[in-house]
Length: 393
Image (tube, rainbow, N blue to C red):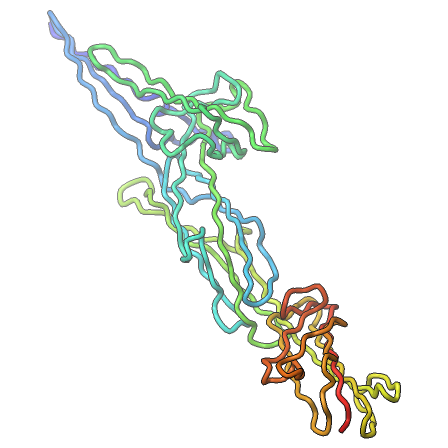
């Protein structure tokens, strides 16, 4: 009498239940990269025959978790700020995530310059490993995942386990083996074991603290450098609002599965706004009669032979700074420049060729700055002050 008996063995990860916060059991989910092994045996009088097949489990498309280190910064025109984004894989397996930066610009002459992940372009992509634990851990600070699902997880990687971050130890990945049936006997799967160290603020994983069904996702960071353009109206700030868009490479479950699109937003707390400060520069020019011991004022009186001293004070509005500041001025008619008399913030400025006033257009004007600031930079509350003397012909 012939007797047909079928036996099935599936990778341990195939029997996981993810439990929602309510405690309700949901559909079985298996790590992407896991292998479902199934073997059947036909027995008959005088012998037996075994056949097996393998099924590789794919990643189910899931939008990543995106955060940014800062959502608002203020900069001067033509300067940059670097935002650092953190991306966490929330899928059941490895996936490749694309990112493109887009800027909505207001009150500026042109769009922001964007450099994503040091590529000098507006886009990049990240490959993030992922898995789902298949068995409870039997050693502290370890996790057990289906063999083969450790693809793209490497020593030193940061991974998120149940909402907490850990780094994979050196020598911390012990690859498992998938279930197999080389002859008539099936060998059960040996899970991959990963040893981790908690990132600051994350708890130690106690024995049994990572039960079956914990999602494991790699965490990576990348940067977006926003270079500000020039505000349209002096004294009125502009803004560059940057958001990221992207798509998964994996597809969703079911017939006609599709990739999943995602976008950062103000509501999600990962939109960035770069405010471009708009300096409104003021320049005041005063004069005094040195010979007559006069004080600086808008006007003065003089006689032939008197020495006059001019003072130019450059300031910017509160909360801003001016760059590339340059003052030009000419020696007034009926006067002669006093060689070596030009000062910037009380420091002597070298004369132009033939001991001429360094502020003249012929000399290219004079780059001015606040005391202690870089060339051409005027800061709030710290004016640039230029003085020079002439004698009345």
